[in-house]
Length: 411
Image 1 (tube, rainbow, N blue to C red):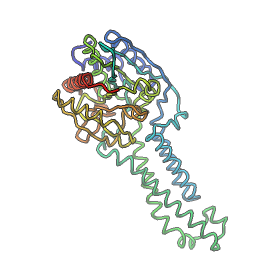
Image 2 (cartoon, helix red, strand yellow):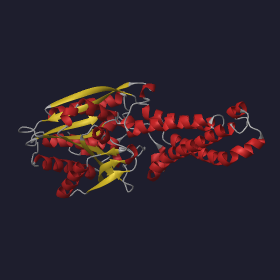
Image 3 (cartoon, helix red, strand yellow):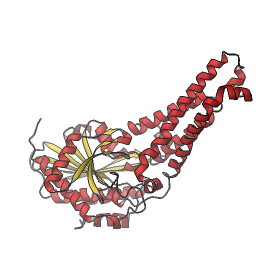
Image 4 (cartoon, helix red, strand yellow):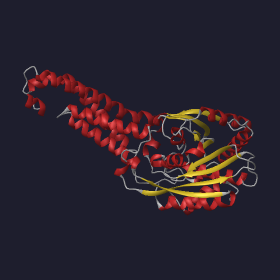
């Protein structure tokens, strides 16, 4: 294994390149990790699972198209507008906030892999510590370069304006229904065919704000969609080969001197970028084994200051505050500063594990906005990785492991 951690990143980027979920390049990276981990662990397994690589792009397009249809429907049957928006927002909520695979079946399937290496403790294992990252890389998302600081706002504008638009459509529907009993022709009303006098009387007070708010939703949705979807893969040196370099470094460091009572797993997830699916599959398959485990996930640690995520706001992910406190204390002991943060936008592999009730957090390299560094942009290349950052992340993880291994054991 190379002396410098960044050499691992250069090697993968040079030999394999970008690694889109479900692609042959992602599979080659899983095989690379297996070969690297085999000499420094007691066992290595590669667990295959089915994924839908197009689901994230598909969800964004799905939401925009149906909000556009809802806007058009408003001029014919506003009640349909409300129904469409309710269903569309519900799908978004269940998919992003609850991790449900509702529309996944609409997209082509592929095969992805999780790589799991286990290093046994010297004596009987009382706990597990799992250090993880992911080996797939993302597509370029121009919005991350243009408006990174405002990502959460730009995502919420089309959503919240669509909800308000749906409320106005309800009001209009009720207004129409009530007025049917005031003598207007029901057929004319149901088709939206009104005289100019009717239009003035019944609809301008509602339609003017409705059209404005509907257009805000459609235009902001179009801007968000067009600036989030490309077919250009990025190298993913920082996101997330930086994590792989560190966890491979952990395996090398402890292979000859494993912890006394702590079993260590080194895990690399596939299919993180489209849907954090690899970690979800991992949590479902290894649930019982995770009951006594601490999962320390790493993201974009090759640049920026270190944060430990306690909450992922945009996906309603609540991570372990107890484990975050353990990370902060370890940082103080080894003189690597770590700040607890609530992540305003984006999500990590820690959330699907936390949703299953297991203790997990993410350590990330963050920028001045407390967001991921070199995130889904063309500049995410090995030349922009800071070796000192990687070494500090390694030092921090080894200190966490040491602290856990010396903690009093509670059954």
